[in-house]
Length: 397
Ligand SMILES: *Cc1c(COP(=O)(O)O)cnc(C)c1O
Image (cartoon, rainbow, N blue to C red):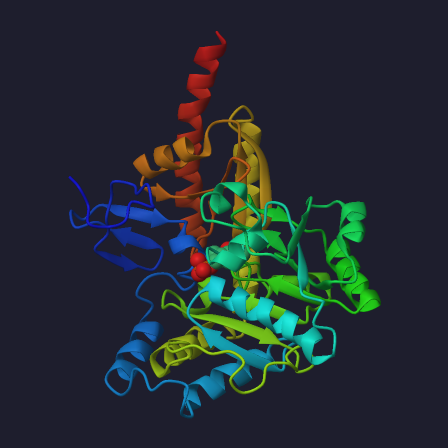
């Protein structure tokens, strides 16, 4: 069957009609355990009653007014995010890429406002993913995404992941900022060690650079802290967040210190849809739950348990699973078999996983999952790994 949709995705042959918590249900009533959460988006699972109530209540009142007027729910969400983070100001938008665009523009404008407009370049890291707009593609630096789309946007210098010498060599008189994910998500759940994050902070302070943290995937409780950089006891100057922050409603935010945002004066940036009353109502409802006492403790406990159980799977099937990566509920299995094939086989077991770079499959379950959900998922992963182990042994004999 031909589709009217642009064929930019190789979609799995399954569709869902509704969701309940960590479960997705097909029109035929088949139930899938959702350990992808729409790529770390459905942080509170599907059809969370508090989110449904917030959305439907707001939908009956007011959806959109534009940013030409005051938006009280946006003032409130901005203040709550500021109170809960290093930041002083928030800019709401609709996606991760847009949040990163805002971050990039802010870093450049900071130096322009300080009389150094020549400082516009941003150092990024190999394996990074910052989005699909022309600038964020250039920031991510992945050749396969850049090729064929004309000249790469100028102003990004990429260095190998973990190469301190290359980083120092890449910082020059035109450098405005460093931009990094505390854990590379799309790149294959590659964590930046805490001492490295602190080292980047020091380097930025020494050289007058801004530090941009891309927490689009790691943020909003995913690692068991509200934002992943908090584990390292340091803070960026600018940070993007998106995926989980709207619980499934398209929402992104660029957070910054007032100093880093000094160039962003009226008219310097904008968005038609960003921060509209409907999005702000949902964003506030997500924070109501994530900031509740004990919620992040739950994420940490479930994350540890899941990681332990996955380590046991690796020990049992070392030919299939070679490494467990990540923190909290942002975990990855580094595989010895093709990751997309593993994800498809897990789907046959009615478990949804998400492939990532470096031949990894990601586990990004809703943060509300229970021990029973973990047991169910691990059972299905075992069954999947067992299938491949049999094949690998057969091939070896
Ligand atoms: C998903 C992601 C983005 C892009 O977000 P979109 O909402 O798809 O634009 C940017 N950075 C990171 C780290 C991501 O995981």
